[in-house]
Amino acid sequence: MTPGARISAAISLLDDALAGEPAERALTRWARASRFAGSKDRAAVRDHVYDALRQLRSLGWRGGGAAGRQVLIGQTLRDGLDFAALFTGEGHDPAPLSEAERAALRPGLDGAPDPVRLDYPDHLDAPLRASLGDEFEATLAALRERAPVDLRVNRLKSTAGAATVALARDGVHVEPHPLARDALRVAENPRLVAASRAYSQGMVELQDVASQYVCEAAGAAPGMTVLDYCAGGGGKTLGLATAMQGVGRLMAWDISARRMADLPQRAARAGATVEILDEAGVAALDGRCDLVLVDAPCSGSGAWRRKPEGKWALTARKLAQFPKLQDEVLDAAAAKVAPGGLMVYATCSLFRAENEDRAAAFAGRHGDWIGLDARRLSPLDGGDGFYMARFRRPGRRGRAPA
Image (cartoon, rainbow, N blue to C red; front, side):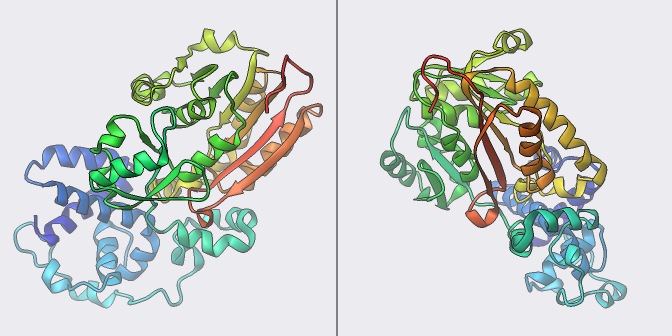
């Protein structure tokens, strides 16, 4: 594919995403139908689409409109590329810019309001400012950029040193990240990770460094009975398995069993033993767990770098619905905690209404529980936006969890 043809494909796919088709699904559909596109073509088109979604409004401001073509025109202008070489109208290249399109171009973001300049919906302005405070501008600016690729060393199978060497042999160069003990940040060739022996042999797992921090700080230890409530794909489940050193009982449950479909295979590769629970299994756990991790459903705003279409789909109504659901999930999860046990509440959200406010509301409803600690993480700390708060249930059950 020519560079212009890649832009044409990205324009069409971006229009599909803006019309409501998930970007990942659209890209997969296009790749399957476009056998002529090589791996470099597919990677370039993906980069165009996700960059456009991360900076949708500012690129549209530069390019003179909100449609896919204008956004990709804005991207081309931002990058200082030659329109005449890319928008040729020849073959599969996009048509040349019209006189009207050229007249609508803006070389920079002078005069753009903050939601345009920093790429977020107008209706999220007030809650973002209230939640982020002095870090508002820097955080929103960071969320406009591509997310780093982080790996977690799986200590059930490897060490940081051995994993680093194995990755380097396959062309993947990594560096330790200080936010989490087992974190390695990919410095070169992130697209080679999935094909590396270190990954296929379970020495490392793909996991954002902030998510790794949550697993490490949760308080899991060998011999515990641990439940990952709202487990999803099981990334944190496997992080908890490492903390437990393979000793104890580790369980995963999610209201959607489909989300956990790949977890047995992932656990086998990692050398971890995980019980996948159904409704009856989780119901039988009342008062029996030393640690329950609650990675609650949330806005996903802390992960907008990875899933940028989420910020454009997050309406004020949707945002307002999460706190009630999070309260219900927390209360249900709390029933699984044994006397003296721990419950950890976590979200990948930036909003106080989903984070500090929910922890305070839980403490208000359960006045005998002990609030231990809490931490908010943002992209300025190096990973996704995350929040976690730890609570201890009163009483004792044998030895109290650490």
